[in-house]
Length: 234
Image 1 (cartoon, one colour):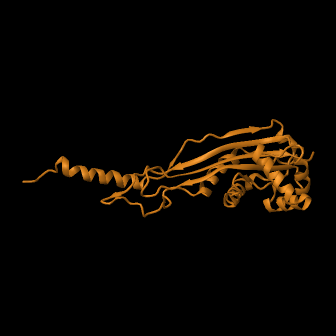
Image 2: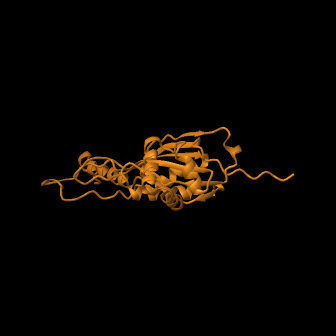
Image 3: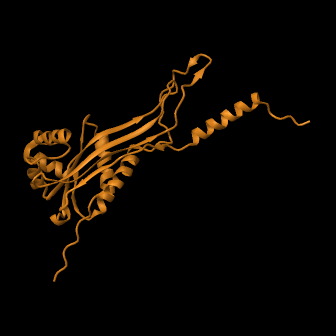
């Protein structure tokens, strides 16, 4: 006689299948909103060169700044402009006014997200570009969940970018975020209680911070105006 599994024996099997499905599930992208603004006459300004100003961070996270700047270069490089590199722009600022000027510029970015009418002319002049792309990293965070904890692992980035001309006039801006979440994790328990000796390990299903930044900045690059083609000769 063939025996059919009872509810008692089937329940652990169902639970195991569900657990395996959760473990194999990819990271989930949370809903994100991007905000853009562009000056109506931007295309008519004839900008050919843009200076890249080192991004500001609230906590001085050099890894976040370098990672974000690299992702921005990769996403925006094909827009047709002559880009003045981050290093060149920063060196020019330091040469013109020392570390105090560089700190003042970074402070302005933290306060208002862009250069103002006092700083933009100087930065534009020393960098040799009619426009400056500047911005601020508002969030650069990875949350890993340890075995003894319950929670949802996640990776989040949030940025604000602004393009200003040599007078400090805002030409284009973008702000937004990108977040990816893993599966909810229940605290691991043993016969001795919570497994407190293990530390949090990165969730392999989650993208890296650079991957998220590149995803975000690729969307923004699609909304960033390409360099206008030179007028045809008569």
